[in-house]
Image (cartoon, rainbow, N blue to C red; front, side):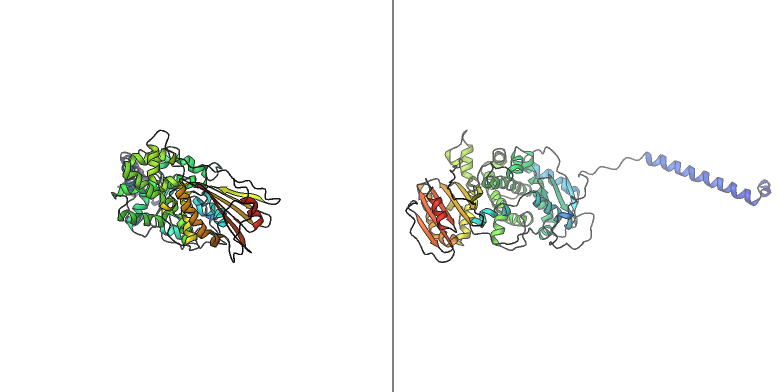
Length: 475
C-alpha cells in the first residue's frame, strides 16, 4: 500500500488502465468460447424469399400506380411454415411426387402487379390472340385494350408463373386467410402439370408453333388449369361438382383470370374460358377414374376443345389402343381463290368447338349450351385483306352427322345476315357461278352460306365480286 502511494498520479492511472484491459479481454474470450458451443439455428422449411423480378419499367405508363402500403413481415395470421405444409398436402391429395421444389417468393401489391404484367407480356393473352378472328366476325369492339394488372393484383393473394415455375405470395394481403390459403394451394397444384409428361413443353411452344391451332392451344391450357382446380378441391376435401366447389371456382377465377380496363362480358367469357372448361373436364375425369384418369389427360392431352366439352368422347378414345373416329378432328382443305392483285391471306386458324359456342352466343344474344356444338368435327377460318384494309373471310365447318350439320346450318341462316351484312339487304339471289345457297348483299357488304352434306361454308366481305370469286371455288 505504501508502494502505491509512492507512485505518481500518472503512474497510478496507467496501472489502472492495464488492469481494466485485462478484465475486458478475459470477458470476451469467455463469451466466444460459450457461443461456439451453442447449436446452430434450425433451417426454415421454405425456400429463401427473394425479390420479385425487376420489371417496373414494363408497367404501362397509363396504368395507375398502387398506393404504397405498410409491409408486414408475413400475411396477417398466416404462419409461413404453413406454405410448406400446403404444398405437401396438395401433392399428396393429387397423388403425385414433385420432381423439384416450387420456389416461393414474397411480394407486395405493387410487386404482384409487376409479376402479372411480366406474365402477360411473355404469354399472349387469348383475347389478343383472337383479335384477327374476332375482327373478321365483327366482334372486336375495343379501340384500345389493356389488361388491368393493378386491379388483379388487389384480388390475387397468390399467383403461379408457369414460365418461371415460381409461386408468388402477397406479404401485405389484408383479405381473408381462407382465400389466401386456397389461392396458395391452387398455385402449388398449378405446378403439378409441369412435373408430368410433355404438357408444359407443348404449352410453351403453342403460341409460336404454326402446327398447333388456336383450338389445340386452348385445350392444353384447359387441361393444366382444370387439373390444378380439382387438385385444390381434393386438398380441401371438397367434392367436385358440389355447390362449395362452385364457390371455390368463382373465387379463384377472380384472382387468376385476366382483368381488363374495359368492362365487357365477352372479354370476361374469353379470358376465363380455359379455366371454366378445364374445371368441368377435370371434374368429369376425376369422377370417372380418379387421379389416374387425370394423369392420362396430362400424359395424352386432348387435341381439341371438342374433347374438353365432351369428356365421354375423350374417355372412350382412351379405352382403345387407336381411339374411335370420334377422337379425330377433320382437317379441311383451304380455299385458294384468285382474288387479284393486292389481296393477301393474313390469318388462318381453327377456332374449335368452344370458340364456336361463344361466337354463336354473341351473334344470338342467347345462352348456347355445349350440346349445340357437340357435333363439331373441325373448322378452318381464312382471312384475306387488300391494300385498302377491306377483308374477305371464308369459314368452313365440318360436323359428325347430317342432322348436326343441318342444325348448325339453320342457326347460321338465321343469324349470319344480321351479324355480317350491316344495313339494308338489297339482293338475295346468288350469282349463277356459285353453288345454290343463301346470298345476302347490300351497300355495306355481302355474305354467302352453303352446305354440302356434313360440311358448311360461310363466306363474307365488303365486295360482292370478291365474295363471288371465293364462293365459286367451293368444291
